[in-house]
Length: 53
Length: 220
Length: 257
Image 1 (spheres, helix red, strand yellow):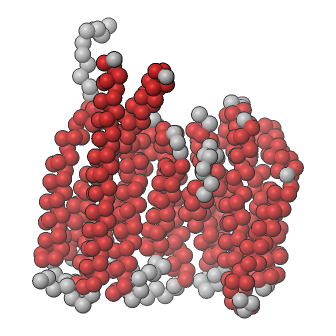
Image 2 (tube, rainbow over the protein chains, first blue to last red):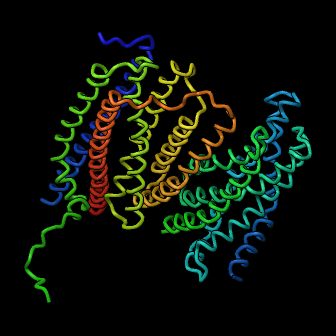
Image 3 (tube, rainbow over the protein chains, first blue to last red):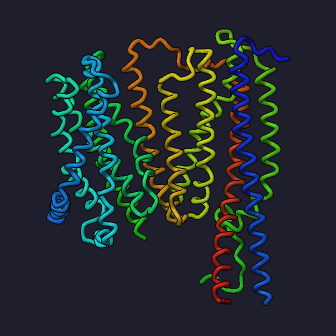
């Protein structure tokens, strides 16, 4: 394993925290993008049916 | 120029008409200052050391409460629309209102400082320094407060946003205001006061432009 | 007189960036390549961070925390610079993409500033003995975090997002002028209260074996930010489209009723 020395908990916590924050940012970004795309699709479909009438 | 003084006069007259509000502001200032000894304990030497900080924090908090009155009534009764189309530029009107605001809200605080000085055990020189630092620093507080007020004037649920925006901007004022009391560094005190004055000048120039811009945007 | 009729004008490069519809078009193709190079950069960076670089002779392996702390701190400033440029775009040109760019960047900036504080705190504990130290840099970063959070609060307080963008732009510009002032005053304050400063507040001395992983990680983080920012901008544009569609739908329902 990589030798992290005597303060390994802090190094681990830093990288762990970074991973957590970056992970949350990525997940949040992707989820909100997907949600917006789905909603727009629903609305566009409704608009098309309104136009067809 | 007469228009400029007319705006100052108008704001002063309107402010003094509702004198009760301003007295309440001074009362708040004094109460916050008096609150600290209850939290800290009646240790005289400790209080004397903390006194400048307490005075400054009380002034800062009182200022945060007061800046909403700068533009809200004008926004609500439509005067802001008149100001925007006046012959005098909106920046000048804001500057005039700021001067009146300082006279109405900061000057009473400075006048009330002896009460806090007494309660917190400040000696003569310390009190004079406190008053001087407030005179030099409160224009900066008023300026930054005006920016916060102009930005949130149109908001219905804007309540706490303005203080949250204004506090980081006011941090240097607090630092230099209380830094004037440090005697450990040679010349540190006068350096702090000069920096404080510079900050006030900066905000007196910056605030009317930023606030006028924000008011124009809010009014659309 | 130039021939002005019956000629389809090819959109210039500025319009291609500027117009929201066109932006959505070309940005879709940029995302996946961006993700790929971001991942690559992180892979290389992390390899160097843990295997390719030695422990610092003074600080031991704690120097490896620098490889996430420095990029986070850099991003907190870089993001504000992006917001600043976008704010100018909003106020001077009323550019709709500038609005979107500002709004998308703010939470990212807040997150990386918070991360910089956290990693800085983690680095501080073994180095200085405490989780928090009132030194110039940490304090200024904390104030920057409050500025970011204030901006986000301001965004959420407005119903009209177009007006919000311009108001937020004003505060962003005021903040940009104030941030150097705040930094200066905090440094001044810090030396005031510690006349004989005993802390070595600087990061590691920059040795080339440390510099390379640092640069690669900074690049990786910057690419990550740009990717996230791009996707969030697209989402924001979509949300504005949703809003106009919803309004149209409500109006149609009102007409039918």
